[in-house]
Amino acid sequence: MRQWGWITAAMALLLACAIRQAAAFEPPAYVLLGPEGRAIARILLPPGNPCPVLDVDGRPLPMQVRVGPETQPEDVARSAPFPVTTCELDLPATARRVQLGGKPLPRPSPVVQRIVVLGDTGCRMKWPASFQDCDDASRWPLARIAASAAADRPDLVIHVGDYHYRESRCRAAGCADSPYGYGWEAWHTDFFEPARPLLQAAPWVMVRGNHEACARAGQGWFRFLDARRYDPAHACRGEAPYEEDFTEPFAVPLASGPQLIVFDSSGASERNDAPNVAATARYVRRFSEAAGLAAQAPSSWLVLHHPVLGYGYRPLAGYVRDAGVLTEALSQLRFPDFLPAGIQMVLQGHIHTFELNQFQGNYPVSLLAGFGGSTLEDEFPPTVPAQLHVVPGVTLAQTFSTQQFGYVLLEREENRWTLYEKDTEGRVRRRCVLDLQHPPYGVTCAP
Picture 1 (tube, rainbow, N blue to C red):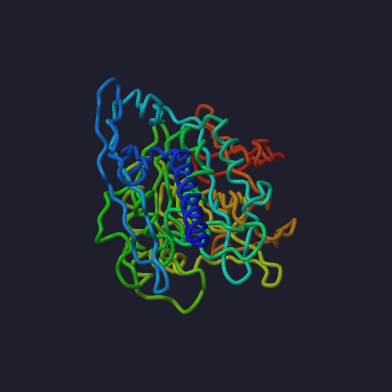
Picture 2: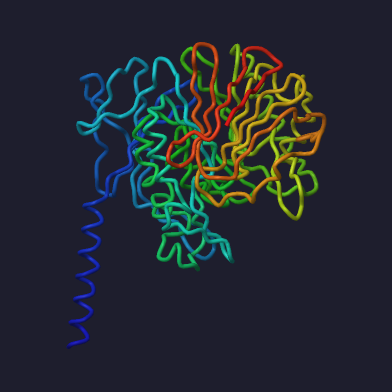
């Protein structure tokens, strides 16, 4: 009898904890920008809760179910539970005030003056030995970065991919008891909760990284962050190779500014193995589509996860300069200046560093913003070799890099963009003026 009493007491304690957690749970609500700049409001709700009604300029507009709760296959050993409902609503282009339960939601700004750029933000938990101190805000500072970036009052946030890193059960003190796997708990802990202040500050452009490929956290990507309509047949439920890892690019026009061309590179291999003919053919098609989008606007910024104009450094291997299948696809297309005409700048991540590059000739400026929280790269050498080619035929003219956590703020003053590299507390580490009016594009930096 005493044993049953102990079990009953334990169950009561677990139930009480669950009730407290449910009461404390604040559903993530956010706005993202999709094809043609369509603004989409989303909220993630516990099961059993109906989609709410938004107040849009005094009009009640009900949100609709994007996808409901379910448990999806994760791999042969375990499943990925998603006990949340994703609700969404396309906001009218004329919307001036959007409220959810009396609280304002961000809406697209009529003039985009300040853009926050960050990427590679999750806390790395990867078997057998790569475990970040997720409980230490100095070692995993996404919450600090989100608060600091929100205080900059941006008009737009661009995330260059890799939101989810908690893939394996923690085997270190700094991440003990952390959720892991590809289901909702890990997504909430790794992204939605720490990013909350920045999600509330401005609309986002979400770029898909290799951590959101179908073999990893792709199911959550399509449920929560993908800007297209949800299609169960196109949501990482099939067998590899996944067609869903090669979705088409789309354009997001910015008010009185360049358009963003959002490119899915999640299917790009991280290894430079023998050329993958099928993957190359897919990226040839996708870059051709990106070129068509670039031709529709006077100026564009290409936004993708894997760097096509950038480099990394590994102490034992030296400089890493090849984006593999992406470089092969672009080489086959033979655009005039490696990338399609009209692209002024490329925003990328994947390499866990800040990096800003200018090249010899008429190439776009290249920014890497992969220093948003996940384990950083080792220190790069203070200088790079003369005539360093990031891809065949494309030579660095000057480069600036930092292997410390932070984010980027781009601020427009009339027709000029100023780039601020910031630390986790929002303090400026570097200020750079970007000359993007006409090629050759230039960069002038000062600490």
